Length: 154
Image 1 (cartoon, rainbow, N blue to C red):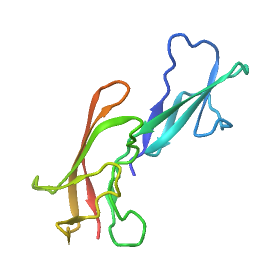
Image 2 (tube, rainbow, N blue to C red):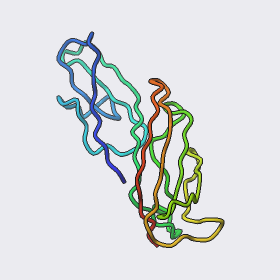
Image 3 (spheres, one colour):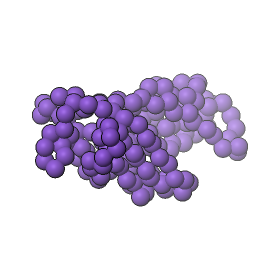
Image 4 (cartoon, one colour):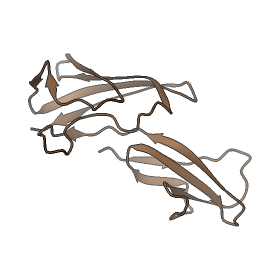
């Protein structure tokens, strides 16, 4: 899984000495506004004043693209799908899967179960495959695109 770094930026009206936590308002809190090794998905960032003057929270979406999957029916990594995409944060989401020659193999439902490693019902061989993930950020209206490749291992 692709692991991300999250940096918290406060608006210019923020004053005071703050500390930060992720996914629990009870902490652990840290002085740094940077979180490393954050897995893809929905998370909540908590910011509290060190003097006890309040706590704020903000839900965020961290997009993560798995580097491989193993569609062998064991219940682990059996499908491939970009993680962290949510109707709450992204609109007009399109996910395309291509083979190494650029042939379009699948257009995924971003909120569905993911790609099972087949094309027209037949299993694709172990190899690298390419993806394009397109979406519009709901709040900023910015268009975002991720491109890359991943490995199907059988």
